[in-house]
Image 1 (tube, chains in turn red, blue):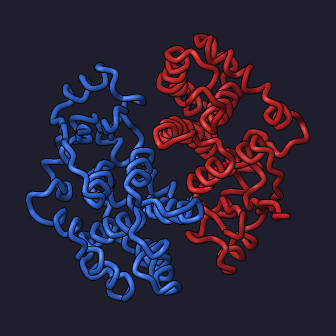
Image 2: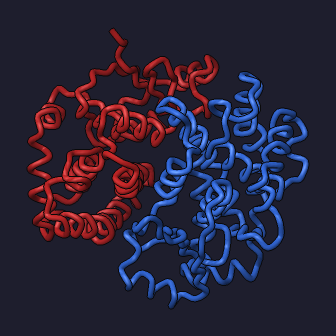
Length: 222
Length: 241
């Protein structure tokens, strides 16, 4: 039996969260090793685990994978969540590159000085609504199907749900002008593996707090 | 006969240059619509052709593709430059993604203020200490001609492009990297690459002052944004690196 994937990261969302979502939804059990000190991080580097001295690191199928988007594409393809042909994969990549960028903006806003943070988050929420949610609402409207691509559940749907929930944490009414996204959110949240992941006790991580920010800053020294 | 791909961008390298390289390496002829004014860019947005209101955009096989990475992956897969299986593909992705940080800071270098001399020094330091050694080691460890699977792939094209960009900053940067020197010579001799390196190809020159003005006007960069941009790019990278 293949061993479980092992995720190496700080105990928080950051760049690893989308990977946790994808594995959970694909029904893949995984282990986590949490980085708490700079020494641990440096040891991973010294032992040659980190190709570019960066985490996330996922040990899977005999490989030590780094670079978030490389990992995500691998998992999406491996677990049949990447479309049925090149064109569907292209659409999924177009959509997820957008959602990943948006989630990165949110993640980075927590590292801004406290007095800038709220304003930054407001800007990101505005951007989410005007540049992203408008677009995805239109996509769903145009084809009238339940899922973003190819009338079939894919990684793009997982990503969109993930970013919707993240934005709603800062702005609970973010979907008020997007009826199709509201229906989408309900529908996707009810998929069994997703429902399970959204329960307390799953490996889903909470929003960043001061402790998480401090840990990351200490480990990466910035 | 299928229509040629059409690239929508301004007349400069930016993020579209990697697409030009990959299409050239794949031997695919393409057209370009290069806008010169803010108005032309805005018309493109108003025409609803840009999913996120940003370029690059490439019309290919009936799609209006945006997001550079998505575009590059599609081309790589279509033209057999993405490895023979999923494990090779993820290696290619890892190698390409690993180059992106360095690629970006070099790309944004022209946006620096003159007083930000440390940016160039920082780039060269990262290139020689962090990035180039990785690829030197990959080539040394397996002793093959190309990065992945003993076959030319998108990772090789991107690395070649990046090497040339770093050399434009410092021409002897490969001095201590013998495998990369061999690699560079090997790739530059491939017929399609040779052709792309000739004057008259669709390869774009480095950004100069005039080009920067055009880009500023089109994308409406403000002076403040430049300084912030470069520092933030560096800060993010410091965080990641």
